[in-house]
Amino acid sequence: MNFIYKIKNFLFPSVCALCGEDLPETEEIRYGICNECKPGITMPGGNKCNICGKPLISEIDTCISCRNRQSLTALPYEKLWVLYPYTGKYRELLTQYKFNKKLPLADFFAEQIRNVLNEPELKDVRIVPVPPRPGKIKEKGWDQVDYLIKRLRKPFSKCLKRSRSQVQKELNREERIQNLKGRIYSLGKVPRKALIIDDVITTGSTMEVCASVLKEAGAEKVYGLCLFYD
Image 1: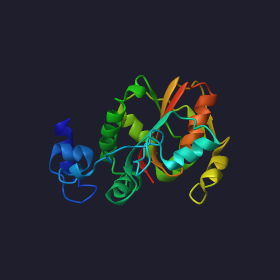
Image 2 (image 1 turned 60 degrees about the vertical axis):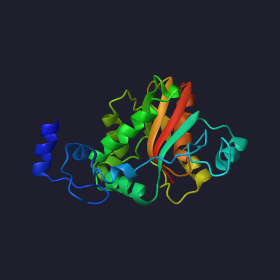
Image 3 (image 1 turned 180 degrees about the vertical axis):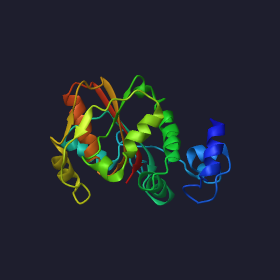
């Protein structure tokens, strides 16, 4: 494997996704990040919300946002993990992966996800990727979430599908949920215990709709994981 990376780098020199410097070492090439930048990519420490996984500021156990949502309706997933804030160098990482197709970054992200998969709640879980919007693969040439879960080399089920809907970007949380209802649906048997994976969570509407669909289709426990939180 190391020999393959060296040959590939000789033919197509690799550069760090963050600083742009050449990557001479095999491990650097594998992950697409240099050894100087990699230590600076860390997950926020401290207490986190036991529902959405975001760092708590002054709250205890549950953030205000999740507390307010729970008062209106029960969330369909048991727990959510988020890895990095969608700001600064972290945002650049996703830009390089998602839009510039820096594929080695998938192995870096996969390594971080495997650490989360060691959580007791996620024993025997089956991964379910958030389904791409129709036409995305034809338009973009790939689906970054699908590629990521394949690099995880863990059991997964592509049991969620998505039909055409209005673009989510300009909608608020309630509008996003209504926009997706009935347009994300299950196809075939769903896992008894599922972990939904997405790249970015903003309002949480996509995660909630996906989790609801899985529960309605027979899933007993549903969890969520997103690389970045906005």
